[in-house]
Structures are given as structure tokens and as C-alpha cells.
Image (cartoon, rainbow, N blue to C red; front, top):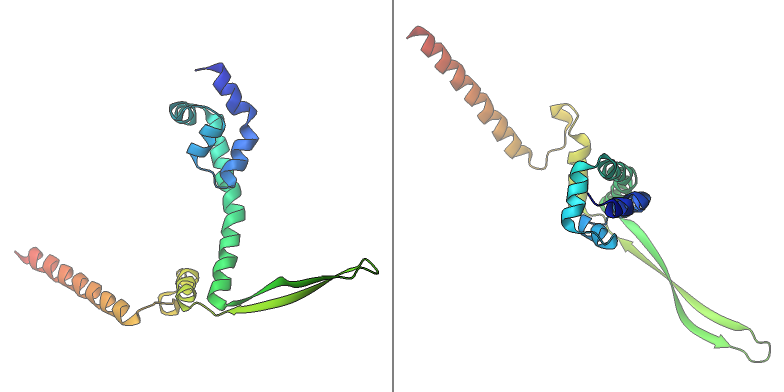
Length: 165
């Protein structure tokens, strides 16, 4: 293994973690480090330090990105309001040298998204007892449960029949 390439990776350990947390791909990283794809994957496979960097970055990303995504999904499910400021006109008065700016505030209401709300309900209630879970299509769920019960009964009857013969 080339000491120079290993030194590049060691010197950029924190950068690698930061890049991975920011969502960089392996391709972007090994190109930024100016090492080959084969070298990157070889070191990833053989060097615990690089594997540890990937694991550390994945953990940091889970701690930062997942809560942000949950918040975004919750906002989409419940609806939210966007407020933007837009400069409409700028007037300059020459006597006093003051500049006057007219700003228009724009408020836009984003309605709730029922599909996102349903998916979140399914996700948040999946660990609850069966009768308390949210199911998108309860009729289909009931049919699946009945079919499963019938299959169990058929297997039991077959086992009993095989005992007597």
C-alpha cells in the first residue's frame, strides 16, 4: 500500500467524515482526495480507520438528518405557512441621502398532504397493538387476516388427517 495515499486519507480523516455527513458519495470523496476508485475501496475494506470514519459519519448523519426529515414530513402532513419578503421598490431622496425601501411580505399557506399524513400514521402506530394501528385499507387487512386463519385451520386439519393414516 502506498504510504502517500494512506497519508492523504489520514490527513483528511475529519474532512471525510464531514463530507459523508453532508451527503457526498464515495466517488466525490475519492476524486476530491485525488485517489483512485480501487484504492478507495481497498482502503475501505482493509483499513479500520476508514471504516470507522464511514460508521462515525453515518451515525452523525442519522442524528442530524433523520430529525430534520421527520420535521419536514410532519410539516407536510399538517400543512404550514411560508413567509417571504420581497423588495417592491427602492426610492432614494437626494436631500438627506436616505434610501427608502418598500418591502412586501408574502404569506403562502401550504395545505396538509393527506398521503404524507397517512404514511406517518402507519409508521407511528406500527408498534401499537393490532386494533390500535392505523391501516390504510382496513377491508384488505381483514381479508388477509381471514385468509391466514383459514390457512392455519387447513394446515391443522391436514396434520390431524396425516396422524390417522
